[in-house]
Image 1 (cartoon, rainbow over the protein chains, first blue to last red):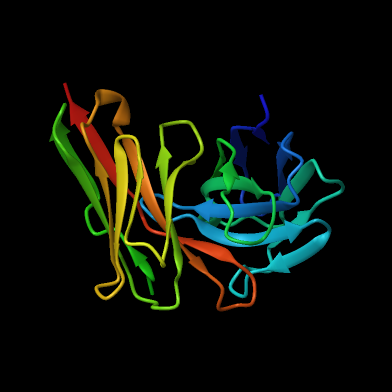
Image 2: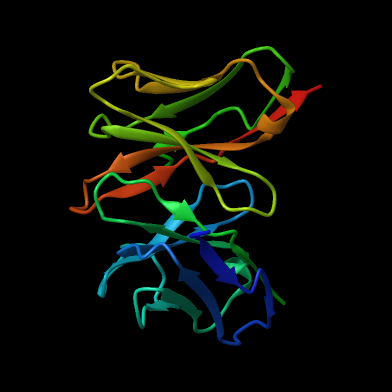
Length: 113
Length: 114
């Protein structure tokens, strides 16, 4: 089955210790997104890639970076995690950037100690 | 400031009855809306969408209604089934930054009682 996969499902890191979250897709979609969702809040878009074209949301902290080495994979790097970065991180894909359905992975829950 | 609001964090409905989930938005430029359903330990999955040129879209037991003048949309599930118990997110398509993105609400947890 074509799908969006996120690894790991749970990640524990220490305050200030860099961490990388991974997303892969077998849908061959052009666009990949990273969302942050804190408890009882709406998923919030951090950035997205249209192919290799990176698009950062204006309010995404500099602490968050992303890499997309190929169509299938996208990584979220948090350079110096703070306690406030503890959240669920959702990866999503879509065929294009128009009003298209986004397909989500199961998410990675990040805990910062 | 929340541009897409789901004011009811939770809703309980008896099996077989109608579930009505509500969503309000503030930006009259939003022209495409979606509903996603999320089960525990899974990512949100697309349920149904509606364009602003319509006021209703139906797919089986699920119907979305759009009232543009009130900036309000609702999702009706008839009849509700226990398997419909999940968190439902409303989302609106925003093009104001020059690229499409979805603005999500905070979700409504639906519990369908057997």
